Image 1: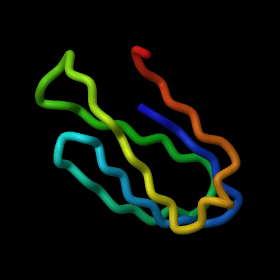
Image 2 (image 1 turned 90 degrees about the horizontal axis):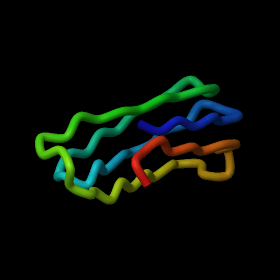
Image 3 (image 1 turned 90 degrees about the vertical axis):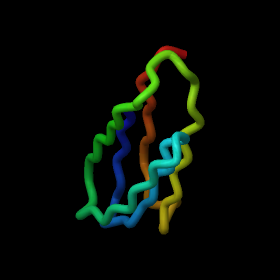
Image 4 (image 1 turned 120 degrees about the vertical axis):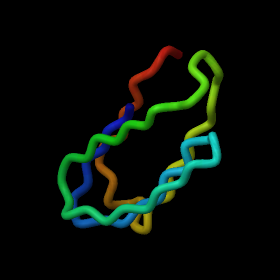
Length: 65
């Protein structure tokens, strides 16, 4: 699970590291994203691409490490 806050509407793509990718468009403000993995206990690298990264005011990851 991770969350972020933006100052304006933003488009973003999340690659969850297990072959799953999702693209979303938001209205601006607070976002919270989560994903359920088929194999628990493995480590995955999550990548987030924002169309306007300078508009991201805060980004927070919640996890085991």
